[in-house]
Length: 167
Image 1 (cartoon, rainbow, N blue to C red):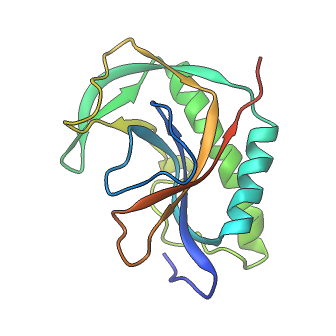
Image 2: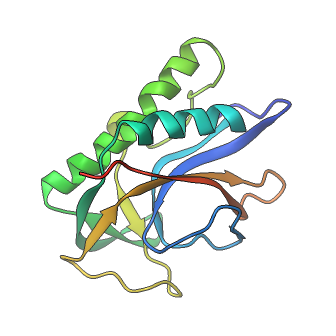
């Protein structure tokens, strides 16, 4: 992943499973699933992508599947296949404008892992977070833009949360 330039932040797009507020900042992420992993981007461009995606996307439900492990962390995957496809579609809706920015050499997606065909939607399950159960439904009614503080990548700040369109 390329390094930041002046005015560029490490931004990601996420859906939270618990209510959150803009400006919330924490060393421990609230329970969420990453729709798009961190990329170096100007904040205003990240907000523009967020508004584009949320302005054209309807809210939906995902069903949780079995627990598993990724990188030594307990995670909860989505099932059935329809839920996986819905999460992947939301990822693609973020990827599309980012690819356009990449063509204009505004963002560099080279080296960003787990995007496109390699995207695997899941929720990381931390010990201190609410327990998730197989079969439980998650309502995806928003998308958040989150900044990871560059001098401490463990600290995240919610910059903006936009609702998805109602069905």
